[in-house]
Length: 478
Image (cartoon, rainbow, N blue to C red; front, side):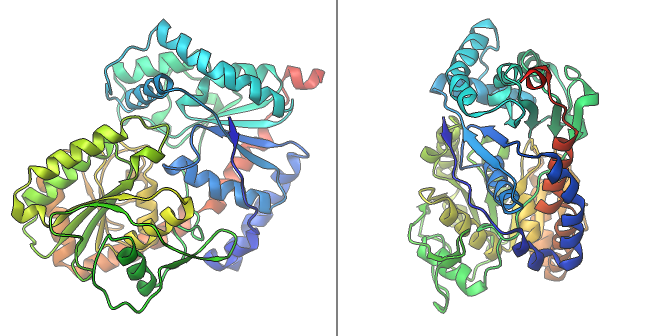
């Protein structure tokens, strides 16, 4: 188990992103809930400090909370490969997919509980009765009983769920629900994700958010984006007038130094080519192979190139399927006709420096002509929110939380059937052939995020949940 170092970011910085009126309203609405926490520490627990939307949100939410003089901390628990294979299976099952097809029986319960038992001993040494603990996603559900018995106030946060419940989804919830009864609140991204196995009266809906001042979303000039993408080897050319620099969380200026691992037939695309981009984990539910085939088979726009970008798979500890998915993508890329393959590029982004990685993603999204997220299932889709904030036209699927962000034809274009590659290609053509429509959609997307999906709303909702929690019996005795 490790504690993640969290910087303290003065919340006043946020005023320049949202304006004085919104900022002052945020401070006023959070004042009382902050007082209600008193001296209690708020702990967030998950299984990775980098790679994926949960980790990214925690970095910003906790840093700004600390800037409000709140004691928020972040712990990352350990697990072995069998544990992560099991929790990835549960993750896939919660989306309605079989995953590796393995069991969720008593043997799996035993390994799950044994893995968490070692973490629990370390957690109980630092968490005090009366502290608030937010456990994130299936990997942490088994911590809930011991932490509640210890006297902590427990919130379990589930970031994923299905559009439709089936037997596969139900068996995953049957596995998890035996651990969750003593949680005082359950937080879901969408109401549709709440299973019948849980007490709905204890459920709260809190959509995710982005931090517009983070390394991934901070303002970036076109010249800086160009320099970063050329430095990393993701594109070539450009006018060379910018520097590959970004602003770190501590306010210092940093230079992007590392290169991406590129898979390209004739080198990376030219900087001046129209670029279709999907940035996501190497996850089969993000359907990178489907994106590639839709682009190859249904987009007769020979000037456009496609970049599929994801993290270096060795750096994401809690996603054991990443390497195999990347291999599947590379195999599918190798089967493309040469005339198409030269326009399709795979980018594994360096993960040695979390903030550098975020700056590279920022540059790639800002340079993209169109950003896509053709997920088969999706909890929320922060890559969608990020691109919308950057005023990019989005082509995405009508699944999970994506459909809560985009009104099709207004903020982007939604594909009703995630496997309809022809419809995906037509949506790309519509934006490529109508730049005015693409610009209008991007502007509307930016306004939507500013109104609904920034951290001010997200943190305020968290604090309101924490303020409602009552000390449990153990805390009262203490």
